[in-house]
Amino acid sequence: MEWTGLILGALGLVLGGVLKGATGAGAPLLAVPLLAVFYDVPMAVALFTIPNLLSNVWQGWRFRRHQLNPALTWGFALAGAAGAGVGSAILVSLPLDLLLLCMAGVVFLYIAFRLMRPHWALDLGIATRLAALAGFAGGVLQGAAGISAPVSLSFLNATRMDRTAFIATISVFFAATSIVQIPLLAAWDIITPFRAALSALALLPLLAGMPLGVYLARRMSREFFDRVILVLLAAIALRLVFSAVT
Image 1 (cartoon, rainbow, N blue to C red):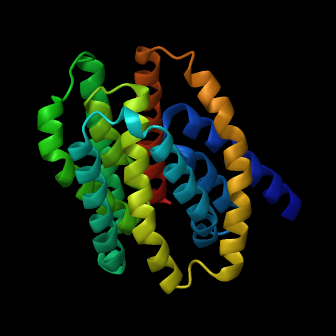
Image 2 (tube, rainbow, N blue to C red):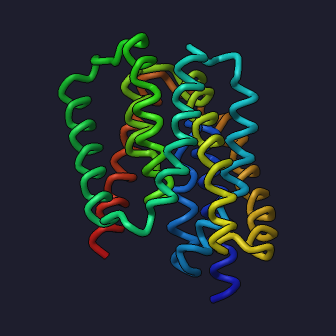
């Protein structure tokens, strides 16, 4: 079981890296649940912290010239960091199951809306004004529930920005929330020195998968990329429902 867990956990990290390289998001959706099957949830979350932070710092830097609007990117990210601190502080008092179900419902409604109106897009000027609110809400979810994607991915997907701009924006957001979350997890002894060392090793299979994702993404049309994000959102929402009812 130990070797099986290590092999499948590494495979989950590689596949998460492929998805990360292709879309800029989604790696935790594949890697963390698979790690949690063989270990426990705190261990799975701890193992993914360093790969999550460093991969997003790297992608944020690599795609920095593709930011559509620095005010949107940094307003979104800094508000997300603040929200992650608030969410982490109130973690123990939130009705988590209800929160997860509500967010899953919001994502499903958004997906249904996009399928009914596939050419709708959120105006970039409006998105910039809403960035801090969306970022803070996503950050609170990240701190309180360990997942910001229902808000962060839905918000950015609504702008219909292309893949490079999407990655440039979402990577800065994820990195900012990680910078706040990691010290808090360490303070609660969820991240220990041993787990931090394992987390550093977990970066290797994630990075191994990212070049394949980048290669595949170069052959994606904008429409296909948009469908990938919608499928990813649906998978996240289903994961939220599963987490709430089990």
